[in-house]
Length: 242
Image (cartoon, rainbow, N blue to C red; front, side, top):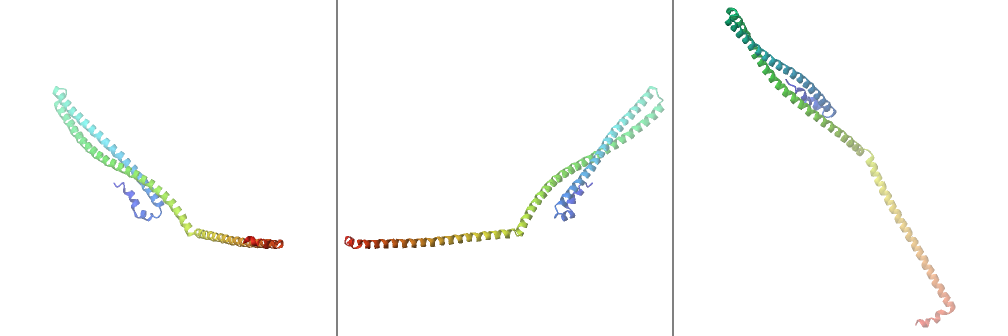
């Protein structure tokens, strides 16, 4: 009785062919679990039936044993009645012999029923072990299925994210970003250039203003000298300077 045969579907060629598509192994595992549950139901029915046969064999053995004792008691009663004179001896012997034959027949039936009971109980033990193993296997694969589904969820999410990242890398977005960096660099250089030009413009203005200031100072000095000459103050102050 190979109740675990269908579980090996997961390891068969179609399972290997379905590895690239994660949904197929999940469906295959779910189908395998459903098949195992059907096998479990069949095994439970078989277990119940064999248990019933074991119980019936035990009851039959007890009944045959009781009948065997009852026929033996009847044979004794027949002989006792004949001994008391209540029953002809020949009739008592004949009936007592029949009772003993019935006793022997029921004794054999009791032994046979007892043997059947032992065989059925042995089968019950084996079936019960198979049922426990099958339940454990189903529980294991149900947990494996939960883990597999979780892994598929994580894998799909990771695949989606990675696909998006790959699409970003392969699209013009990166090129656009590089162009934006280049444009910013150009704008920065241009701003620096305008700054230098502005500084140069300020320097020229300062030179012009300085030149004009020097001219004004020289004119003022000349005006003072002319005024002194007019007043005759230049020659008068010369000895004082010595």
